[in-house]
Length: 225
Image (cartoon, rainbow, N blue to C red; front, side):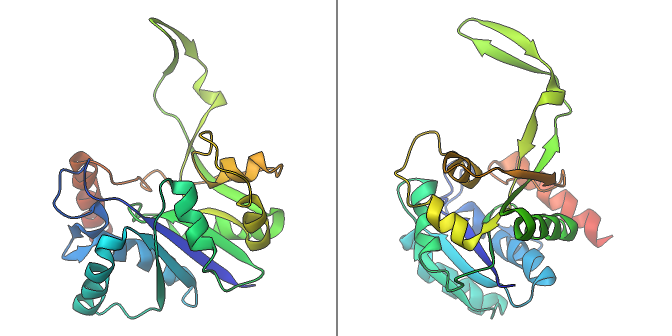
């Protein structure tokens, strides 16, 4: 079955307080985005890849590919106003008519091999699968100036890759954009398709702040020990 990846890399470095987008910050001498891509290519070497990014950084992407010897074929498309529009732009470039497509944040460099395989396999079987992890902290729901405790066992933290049947995702993205579309699963769910949950991995964090980068450096060092 055909497998594809839409890698969303629309950041411009604001929250990281960096002069370059966070996906290009280096970990162990290599931009974050290459660590992310290599996690997927280690599992599926023939993966079709579409990269969605701000047009101002497309030339920089190609320069980094040449600098770091990254040669896997990647289609690059412009991002949109919201994540919804960025993913839709990427989806328009997927060549596969059938199979499974994953949508993943470029700044989540540590999805495990097992997590990637679980997501693709479940999507092949059920059409839509996303990785989640349980909460370890207590949570409260806020109502104005008051709050109420909630049972954390009833909630999950959602990660990527979010995997879907290619045909299903294309049909779901024919919907008009809504503010409630916070991720691809919410788009597919609004289309009327059930989302299957699979086990994620806790280190699969989204690198968005300087503190996250410190974690990423520490985790990468631990993996290499």
